[in-house]
Image (cartoon, rainbow, N blue to C red; front, side, top):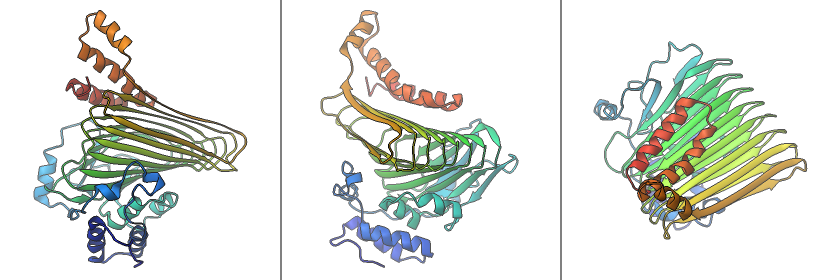
Length: 423
C-alpha cells in the first residue's frame, strides 16, 4: 500500500488500521490506497475549503457490524406503516427482512450489490473524491434497484437508512438505482440515521435514454460527522428532477457529481437546508454537460438561525463539444441571526462558445416590512416569521412532478417550523 500522508491524524490512523485488518478484493484495495495517499480532506483542498473534515473528525469510530436479529428488531420499531414500496438498510446493510417484497412488481428487480458491479464501476469513474474512495473501500451489504426499459412505476419507492446498533459507529452505505431506456419512477430517500459516530454513504443513479426520475432526499438529523455522496449519469433525453431537504445536521457534507452524458438530457436540482445552533451543512455540486443541447437548473436555499453555518459550492462544467448548453445556478441564503454565516461559491467552467449559462447568489435577512405587514393584519410576530420562512424554503420542492413527494417534503417542513426554532 502506498504511504499515507505524513503526520496522519488519529482518525486516519484508525481507518488505516481498520482496513489493514481485513481481507479485501482488488477494487476495494485500490480505492483505499487512493484514500490513504490523499488523506481526509481539509481546508487545503479547494473543494473542501469551507468544510474541514480532517480537523472535525478527531478519531474514526469502529465500523458497524452486520445487524443481528436483535438490532433489526430495534430498527423495525422506527418504521411506521406507509403506502409505498420501502427498501431498508440498517447501519448501512441492506435488510430484506424489513424491506418490501418487490418480486411481484413487474419490471422491477431488487438485488444485493456486489463489489465489482459493472454499472457501479461505470458510474463512479467520473466522481473523484477521497470520501467516495473510502466508501468504496468500506461499504458492504448495499443493494441495487433496477427498473426495466419502458416500465412506468406510479408508486413511490422509499429508500430508508436506519441506525440500529447503539453507540458511536462508522456507517458506510451504498445504493445503486438503474432506470432502463424510457423507464419512469419516483424515489424518496429517507435518511434516519442519528446519534454519534461517522457516516459515509453514497447513492448512484443511472438513467437510460429517455428515462425520467423524480428523486427527493430528506435528511433530518444524522451522525455527528456525515458525508453523503450523490452520483448520477443521464443518457440521451433523460430527465432528472432531484430535491433535498436538510435539517438538524450537526456536521454534514452533501456532494453531488452529475454527468449529462447524452444529448438533450435535462437536470433540475433544488434543495432547502434549515440549520440552527452550531449546525453545519455543505452542499457541493459538480455538474458536467458532457453532450450537446443539455439543460440544467439548480436552486439551493438556506435558512440559518443562531450560529449555524451554511455552505454552497456549485460548478457547471461545459467542455468544448457540449455546444448549445443551457445552464443556470442560483443560491439564496436567509439569515435569522447576526451570528449565522453563509458561504456561497457558484462557478462556471465554459470551454464551448455556443452556450447560455449563468449563476447567482444572494444572502439577506427577513424583510421586516413583510413581517410588519402581517402583524398589522393580526398575525403574531413569530407566526409571521415562520410563514415567510416556509414560503422561502418550500419553493425548492415545487420542481418535483410527483405530488406525493412534494407533499411529504412540505409536511416535513411545516412540522419543523411548528416547533418554533426558526421563528
